[in-house]
Image 1 (cartoon, rainbow, N blue to C red):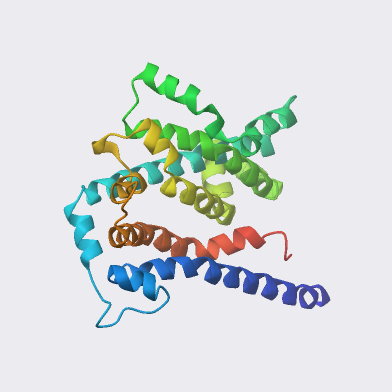
Image 2: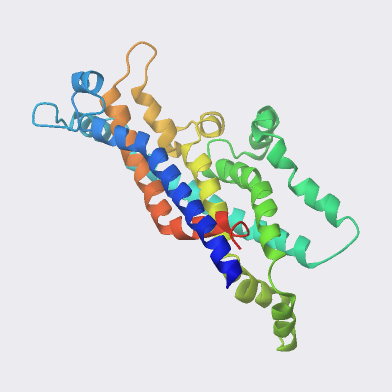
Length: 279
């Protein structure tokens, strides 16, 4: 009872700090949203003011709908993000389970090898990746982006999930084996539900870089039919003139799925981040 009283204030402080950080992080998004409903002059004159009868305008959203295929870009981004996250979580969890459950010679070296991608940015190998995609005929396809993002997200997924899976009780897994469950059933039915907060944390941390990435879509999939939302919105940004109404409107529409996923995973995300720090 004494231990619970000792650590309760620290848990409250940790959750309060996370909520405060989220509010600070959401402020730029709020500014983008309110300015997307303004006239061009009002954006520069009063960027922090709410739209009123004089400044309100939907010209940016009309421009986005008329120029380019916004819904196709949105669909491409959604497909790439969802498929990439699915395989990142699946392969990352399976690799993390193997490293945490089975002790074998080279276990530590294998873990370090899988986590090496955290320290070495994948963009360093852009030229080699492009040559590989050209050789396999995957340039200007969504699979080129999906494969790159899976490789980009796996190191962090293995690093985080392996630490959480080591905390799963061995007695629970041994009980499952005694009941006749296979290793796959133990993994999917017993282990994965217990590390759900960590899975949500990995998903959120990988979702943002994938959804907002401009580098690999510009290099690997610049074709009109496979453009992502971030790349498609660049049509409104010119060398000398930028249509700020359209840019802010496109960004506002692009941020909606991210906010929805944040709301869905917020509780699991906070639990995953604070797990182990407030025991």
